[in-house]
Image (cartoon, rainbow, N blue to C red; front, side, top):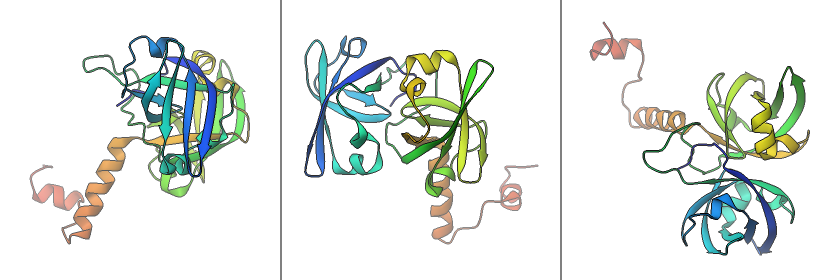
Length: 216
């Protein structure tokens, strides 16, 4: 589990693709301060397992499903990547609950400056966009951000200078592909509601809530 608060920018050392799987080697400093074999590290918002490491870099395996659902295939040696270690129980939750399981990718459609902020407009597939709501949370390349607005097939976020400087968003351009993860609470609620309906249970509406004592 992660928070979406990026700890440092790592650097891609190598991406080796074998058929439909891959292995990624990333240079880092802070992230490696207490790393152990088998630890989870979010790389651009994707929860990956450390299979080897040294004092200056770590290596992770990437399965086919991860390659299909993310932008990892676009990485090249020298590219910066957002890094976050798994959260510690009892630590501050500065962003929101992020699982590191990417739901899909989006594309930066427009980028503009507004005061001290940069506004990104990002197109997203319908299955991802349906869970994105204004003022809700979304993880973009692993960065916890607040949704400013949702229009048509896209949504927008406002990025402060600190976030732009400390993450890969500062160097992203129009046309770039980004990993998207929806708010997990919204996904679970939606799944539970649809499971109830599929099982033939009553729809949950105001009448149902009143009849069962949830509303006066």
